[in-house]
Amino acid sequence: MINKVEICNVNTAKLPVLSSEEQHKLLIEIKNGNEEARNKIINGNLRLVLSIIKRFYGRGENLDDLFQVGCIGLIKAIDNFDLNQNVQFSTYAVPMIIGEIRRYLRDNNMVRVSRSVRDLAYKALAIKEKYLKEKQKEITIEELSKELKVEKEEIAFCLDAIQDPISLQEPVYGDDTENIYVMDQIKDKKNSDENWAENITIAETMKRLRDKEKMIINKRFFEGRTQTEVAEEIGISQAQVSRLEKSAISHIRRMYQ
Image (cartoon, rainbow, N blue to C red; front, top):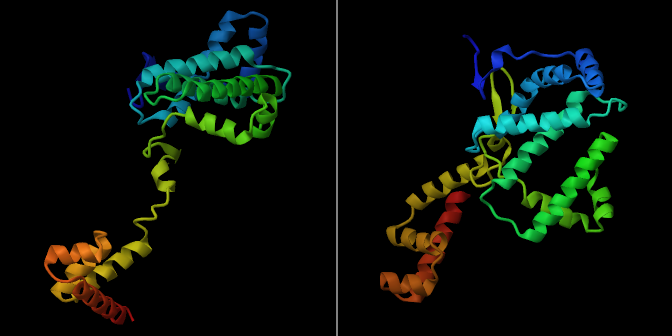
C-alpha cells in the first residue's frame, strides 16, 4: 500500500484526522463518561503523536517505544484538558506529549546527573506541569524562581542538565522538498570562509620560504615548540633559531603586502 507506515502495528496511512469542532464535541462526551468518545479522540490524535516523535529521530531510540510513550502523554492531555479554557486541544496536548517523551528519555539516559540537581529539576518540572494544567500556559523562569525560592540561574542549569542530548542530524524544520537540521544552524568558526581563505594564503606563503625557515615556523607556531626545543631538535643554537625565525616572519610579511 502506498504511503503505508506501520508503527506499533498501526497503519499510519489509515489514521483519522479530527476537526476542531469534532474534537470539542468528543471532549464534552468524554467529560460525561463516554469511553467510545475517548477512544475516538485518541485515534484521531495519533498523527499528532507521530509528528512529535519525528523530533526525536536519530537518537538510537526504538520508535515504537517513543510512540507508546507519546500516546501516554496524549492520554494524560485528554484526561486533564479543561474545556473552560479558551485554548485548542492540540495546543495543550503538544507540550504534554513532548514532556512525557523527554521524561522517558531522561530516565533512560546513560549520562548521570547528581541527585540534588535531578531533585531540583524534577520539582521545577512538576510545578511547570501543574501551572500549565491550571493556567493553560507556560510558567516563566522568574515565577519558578519565586515558587522554589532558588536563583533562576540554578533552576535553568538543573533543567538543562537533565535534558537529553540533541543529535546534530535532528530536523528542526522540514517541508516536502527539504529539511533543516540542527547542524545547519550551528556556526562553524573554525571552518568559516574567512579562515579557509586565510589557511590557503598561509599554506602558499609557507611554500615560498627556505626549507630551514619553513621548518622553524612550523615547529614554533604550528607545533608550539620553544626556540630552545627547536634548537636542540635541529642541532643549531637558539640565537640561530631566533635569527631564522625573524627572517621568515619578515619574508611572510612582505609576501602578505
